[in-house]
Image (cartoon, rainbow, N blue to C red):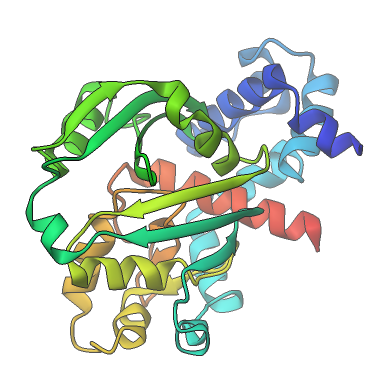
Amino acid sequence: MSQMQDARSDPYHYGVIGRAIETIAARREENLSLEEVAAGVGLSPAHFQRVFSQWVGVSPKRYQQYLTLDHARKLLADRHSVLEAAHSTGLSGASRLHDLFLRWEAMSPGEYARAGAGLAIAWGWFDTPFGEALAMGTSRGLCGLAFAAETGREAAMADMRSRWPEAAFAEDPEAIRPWVEAAFGTGGETRLQLIGAPFQIKVWEALLTVPTGHVTTYSDIAAAIGRPRAVRAVGTAVGRNPISWLIPCHRALQKAGGLGGYHWGLGVKRAMLAWEAARLDSAA
């Protein structure tokens, strides 16, 4: 097993690096020193530098550079996907994403219209590299993933429950833990259940074709689903994506290179883009 794999399999270091990423993203304007970030997570600078570089793929200083506003424009210039894959693959229902295998299925329009009636949804809170996340899932897969770093727990929970008001919710993190852990790099398969209106699901399926470390634009998504004039409606559907990170709405940028909006806060979006860019560059 490589040093990278050793570091990433350690649950203690997983939590440490998650907190460090959250701190760096939240205080990106301060240009924190290595010593300041290391002190915040209780490690010596040398040990923190080594673990962070193994886990993320780049040094803490380099990661901070990925968090700048100019990074979004650079991504758009260098790694802009026009979603040609959406046409060539036919959105067949399987995609390599985030180093795991995703399978997904969508509810029928009739099921969606029932606002979750008859659905049993398990939920739980989990630590992630982007702060605390609320995950929700049915017997068929994860149906919700929300990040509370900027919104808070209460708002995140209210937001997710409002999407399927007739469902039966039960706190049961163990029922969905394997899917959540796979989603953040421990290996295995994550299953998703897309619960949305037909137009929304088309947009979310298109997002699933954007490669890790790349970005697209709202207008490209509109063109990919055959609705080139529906850019505003596409933006709304992107914002209503219930399974953040796995359905990578954070990869959708404005045509001019701006970050645009993000339902769970721009700091979270910026951290996700930086994380993916760092891992891709490290692999290259």
